[in-house]
Image (cartoon, rainbow, N blue to C red; front, side, top):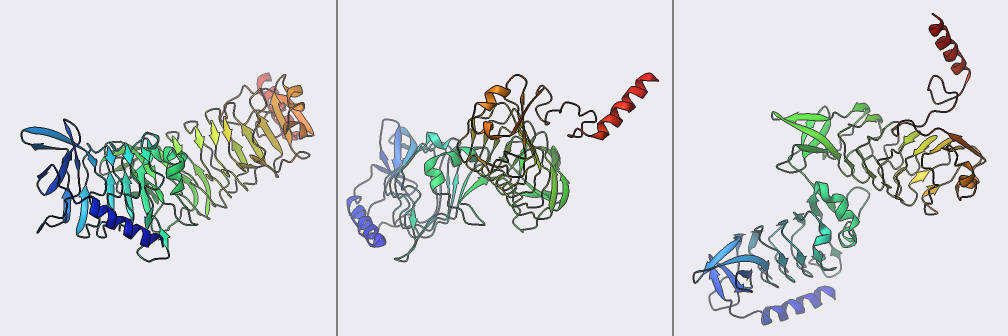
Length: 445
């Protein structure tokens, strides 16, 4: 029914758009929309006139009767039902993409939108063969996107489907995921997502696959391998890598880059790291250690979901933890930094926790489902000096049977030192007495 409605609709559109264009240059029809701007328009159906065909490259500007016009818009339905159109190259001057622009164009498979795009109309891909959309727009919030803009329908009558891949600038991925309309089209299966980071050609160094973030940058991201080979054992990710004589800085780990690396035991992340992609280490169920560098400010959804982490330090640099970021990790020691603004649902599993360090003097108040399964009776809650009474009065912290005050002035990237922990092994035991005797004897000498 939906397909039938769209077919009737397109027939109506074709009838309505059979009008004369203002001028034509190099086989492309234009309408004048202002004193210095023009839009690409429907060619019409004049006798003997061929529709758009082959590879089309739209210029940034055109001249007609001595006047120069910037090409700023693809007009409504301008390429509708052009079954012989195989590709369209859009200029950086395009700001608006009208309704139904590529409706029923069955020969185009890939389309790149320039970073200049500010508005996209409804059903501009409906019924087309376009399966990969490359978006150059850096800030999706600055793009007016119709809620039906990216919807496309299959050629049979019963099954709807959508774009296979939407590639976005690597450094803008978090912005796209935070935008409701773009996130809506990111329907994940167990093995894939629609939204992907746009990167350069991949290359491999020591079993890890990298790709440049953009053509001009000296930064690279670690990406998911397309051959399904997984990292194993203990790995150290370098701060820099070299490819074709050029030195790159490792600043990002892309979405699902290490997903289901079941034999991965530990990871040393580089200090140059600035961002983690969603589910970067999801289901690495033997990963026991992955200290997070201070340059990372956001831990995204599912980043370490179902890993084997036992100790976790959230530095003061981190402001947010996404939903299920550390879900089902058997944490025994957890340090919460001072500057968390948000913690997503089921972000942390606390059922195995024996020590929890709350570095902030004012108790955090998270949503009810942010921290799962508090170990109230078996875990000691360590809080800053002079704040114990505040925590006794604040839920959920007042559920802990043991709350102790300790000095929280130590390094924000390591868990605070316990009183009496002379050898700094994280425990207060007989071994600390031995260490203390050794220190006294050395001083005596």
